[in-house]
Image 1 (cartoon, rainbow, N blue to C red):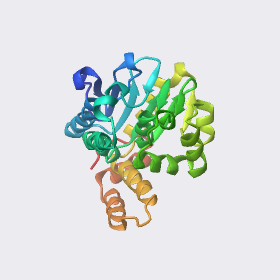
Image 2: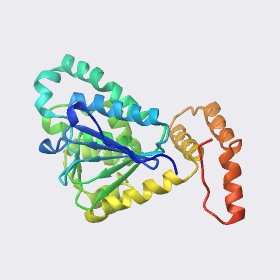
Image 3: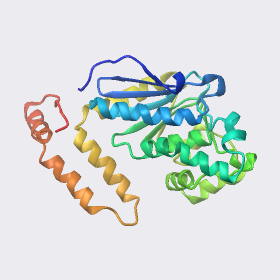
Length: 270
């Protein structure tokens, strides 16, 4: 296992909180009075938190969640719409302002788990779909209200949605703007697993622990290869390099030794 427990770092005026402990990073979207709606500053805060995890060098998996019991992220902070998304030109500016945070999450090299409790709507669902795994509490609610606001869901988020649930279910969610419960989200493949709300945090912690205890190079290779499988022209050079790095690693020697000696391996990520 890697890392030591650290205190909480806060970003965006405390609306994004980050901790790390024993190889697991945790980001909390902390605007519960607005159901954790994402402001422009919070996107910058998310990027800064992920940068800090990279700099620490010992984070092997990251959990994203929302503060309180009512929401993961309920979407973009609508109170900013008049000033940041008032028309098409303002929307383009908003896209530029938030692009660094979205790109940082999309390109983060370690596994990301979305721990979803309560509302997961609009841009909040976009955040969750950028995660590698989505674990939901039974009381979670999902939806894309863009059609009720007279706006359009962005291309990147629509593409992610279509890849996750397929075009038929993507159309249903986008055209109707209906909210669906966790059981339906599981049926259409929007989430990986649904558990009772009371068991959500412990379930995610167990999954994160299992990932953090595995060989980091192997997990990173798996993440890269799965992502490349989604591309029309996979980067075979990157795939082959990731595979070779695993087979040439000290962790591969450790994994074989641990198997022979019938003990848990102690992977170092090299």
